[in-house]
Each structure stands twice: as C-alpha cells, then as structure tokens.
Length: 193
Image 1 (tube, rainbow, N blue to C red):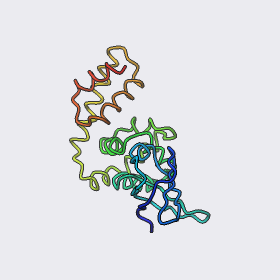
Image 2: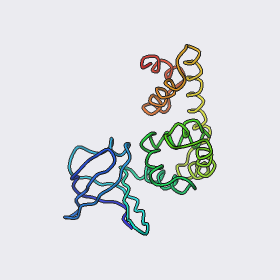
Image 3: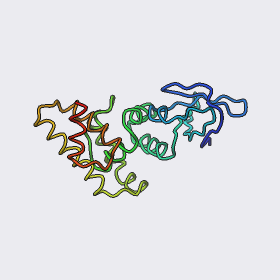
Image 4: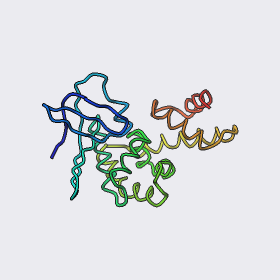
C-alpha cells in the first residue's frame, strides 16, 4: 500500500525516524543499517513495508530496495517476525545475511541475538533458493567468501585468538571488503585484535 515516503526528516533515532510528507508525520521503524545510511540533509526518500494487524498499522523503512527485499524474505519464514527481522538487519549488513544464507552459514545467522540453531537452519532452508534467484547470486562466489572467512578464522585460532572475537573482526573486514583474500582478512584482523 505505502511503498515509499519522500519528505523532510523531522526526527532521527537508531530505531525509528519521523518523516514529514506534506504536513503529515510518518513514524517509521528502521534498522541500524538504515540509520547509519541516513543522509545528513533534511530531504529523504525511504522505502517502506507496511504491516497491517488488527490493532495496528506499522511502517518499516529502508534506505534501499535490497534491504527491504531481504526484510520481506525474512518475515516470510515461520518463526521470524518483524522485530526479529529488524534485529537481524541491525546486527548484520544485508549483504552478510545474503551471503550467510546462500552459503549455508548457520553459525553467522545463529550469532544474532534471539536466533537459535533451529530458526537459523529454517531461515537457510526456506530462503536459500529465493536469495540465489532474487539476487542472482552465484553459489560458488557465496561459498568462496565463506571459505575465506573460515580459513582466516582457523588461522587466527591457531595463533591463539578467541574464535568469537576473531569472528566479529572477520565479519567487519568482509563487510568493508567482501572480496578480500584469506591473507588480507588475516592481516587486517591482526591489526584489529
């Protein structure tokens, strides 16, 4: 029904924004990813998803169509509601979620607060084919990225670094440089650990 809003940014918070469209203020729930991508100026266009329930109409906003599409795919999974999907998009970059699903990376999805092993497996099982089709991903490139991360983690563990801390750093590096080689990931991680 409401697919996007264009107007003035009145209020900006990590979890929501208020957008004035010709005198009407819209309260729009957002993820941390969208919050960090919000422009500094007042004029803004935000893509939305409207959820209608018996007792409420709730708008969710995204800076780009790709993030909205991932959100819609996530809420199509049984057991994933809008707040869990928003938490996922706040914890991981949309590209990381795509890569994790495409490469069967249960650990990455399970690392998100509130997602257990069964839910993570269900997300991958339900969405893998859709993610590959919708975003025209190549399974091999998704697997290669995941392999590089795993090899780098293994090397860092051998060097004596804790896996959980190393994994966070590696994810951050791959977020900035998705096509980083194993050596590049390890070198960057060593600077940050």
